[in-house]
Image (tube, rainbow, N blue to C red; front, top):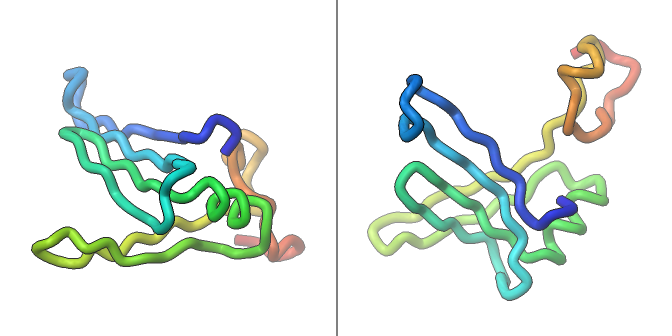
Length: 104
């Protein structure tokens, strides 16, 4: 995560506002995983230190529960590993596959 934020959007129709943006963001002050919701956007916030350790290490995911006041929300952030039988374009922005030598 070089910029501190990565995001993607899912479009549901041609209208500009018919989408849901989801993002992962590093925040220096964050101590534990948290979630920020705005209309049409969900952002998962991680401490910059935790995100760096996860991205650079062998840990597959970061997991936590966020207390929303009315319920607990289970949050999972997991690495997207390269598929070994896909081309370069399909594996863009993925982590190296720890099971290299096998077919996905």
